[in-house]
Amino acid sequence: MWSELPDDRRRQIRQHWEEFQGLPPEERRRIRQNYQHFRDLSPEQQQQLRERFRRLSPEQRDRLRDRFRDMTPEQRQRMRDRMQRDRRG
Image 1 (tube, rainbow, N blue to C red):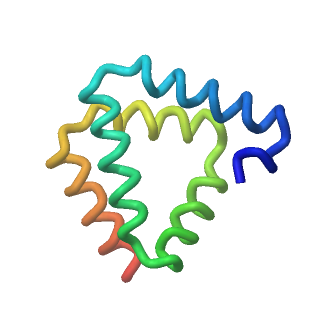
Image 2 (cartoon, one colour):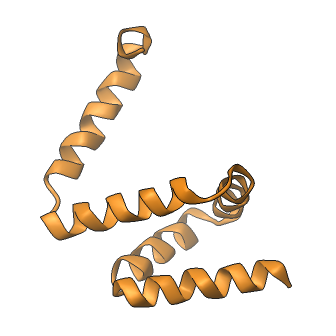
């Protein structure tokens, strides 16, 4: 699969990997946990989150990332729970 990717895409992936490796261990752990949480969602839930994120402006996305990054794991979980309840109506 890797060998089939265009060179530009491989460079981009390598760059992101290097940036990730340069983060503090606690930040890398947090990112992995968030990724795992996302992977645990159903495909429908994943798609809903992707669509909601795409509708945000670049500035809104940056603010959301910054705000989420500064939260404790407990605060992030409460936010996720609140978002789940809001989606159900």
